[in-house]
Amino acid sequence: MKLGIVSLIVSLVALGVIVWHWLWPQTSGDVYFVRMPIIMEKYQGAIDASVQLRRRQESVQSNIDSIISSIGASGQDVNAPNQRAQIENYIRAIEKRDEEERATLSKQLISHVRTAVESISDGKNVGIVLAVTDENMLLYNGVATDITEDVLRELKKNYRNEMRR
Image (cartoon, rainbow, N blue to C red; front, top):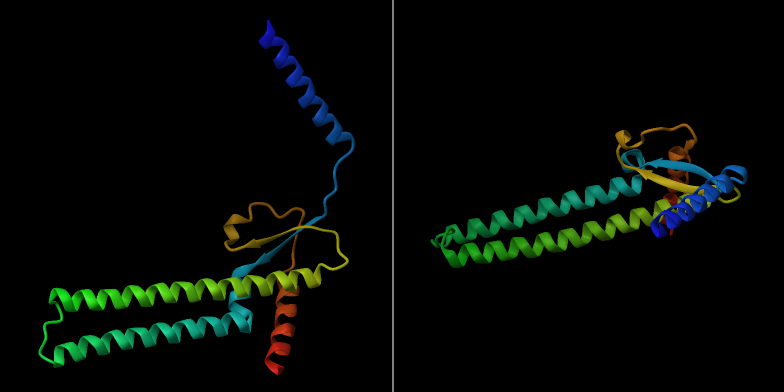
C-alpha cells in the first residue's frame, strides 16, 4: 500500500513536470555545429601543425634508422638485448614526447576554434555549438545551423593577424 502511494506521488510529479514544460517551454538558444574535418582541411593553422608533426615524425624515424645503422656499422648486434632495450627506450621516449606535442597542438587548435565560435556568436542566441567530427554522427539536422564556414573565416582572419606579429 505504501509503495502504491509513493508510485502515485512520483507519477503525479513527473506528469506535472511534463505539463509545465509543455505549457512553458524553456528556450535556451539555437543549436549550431562546426564540421571539424573541414576545419582541419582548410585552416592554415591546422595544416601547419600537421606539417610540423609529420616533419618531426620523419626526423624521429631518421634518427632511429641512423642509430640502428651506427650500431650495425660498429659491429655490434642490433638484436642484442641491451642494444634492443636502448632502441626501445629511445622510441618510447620519443613517442611520449610526440603524444604530448600532439595533445598540446590539439588543445591550441580547439582553443582557436572556441575563440572563433565565441567571436561569431556574439549577439546571437547561441544555446550550444557542437563540434562534429564524423558526418555520420549528425543524425538529424532539422534545427541545427552549420557555422563551419563562418568559423573558418574567423580562424583565417585571426591566423593572418597572428602571422603579422
